[in-house]
Image 1 (cartoon, chains in turn brown, blue):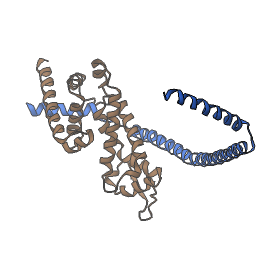
Image 2: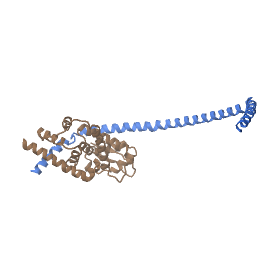
Image 3: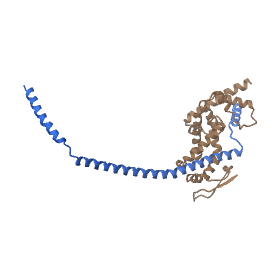
Image 4: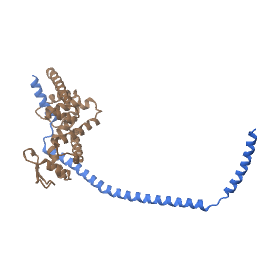
Length: 201
Length: 115
């Protein structure tokens, strides 16, 4: 589906935004300027372009799909409110991801009081690759439940989403070295737990 | 062995944490976000519009209150002045009598204590 968004900036022409946006040239700067001057359609185009990545960031931090969705909504709303403070020399994606990660961390803090059983159960996502066995997923959930929330976030952001250590540090508000060591510990812990489970099986 | 394990872990993690692949889901999420953004816009417009009106009304009320208070104070001063000027109490005569008596009494005491 393709929609046409008129940017308010007279120097830019209409901007084409679509689901396959990566392959279509578009001017994010023009969209941001238009959104800053109150064009909500332009902001909608930015939402469309960034919501999947924003979801991935949020999902790495929170335990459930529902919380990730809430964090994405909260994040975009915060971003909209703070849009006039966005500087053009920043990368919009990185700025937005930090806001979404903060929203996700807030949700995690609010849901701190949870028993381990509930957490393990809630790690289940309704969107799974049917090729993976239920057994493997159960083992993975068990292994992940033994990591700290930060280690889990770091391994997901690095290994699954492809963020660099420095970016992860910015997203989670930790030094790059901490992100690096968290990743090391998380990988080792997952290997240990899963290997023992697989060999036992 | 370690690489095989890592590959299996990565595959499982991706399956577990992958976002929904249904485009309808993303269209729905975008609609939810934009509904909140638009409602935010409505509130902010209402706040800006009504906020300005209320601010102007409050400023006018404050000025009116200040003028009233100032007038009241002026009237009170005037009244107090008139009360003092126009009243002629008999107090000064009585005071004088008491002072004369007191002076005589004090002289007697000074005389007694002097010895």
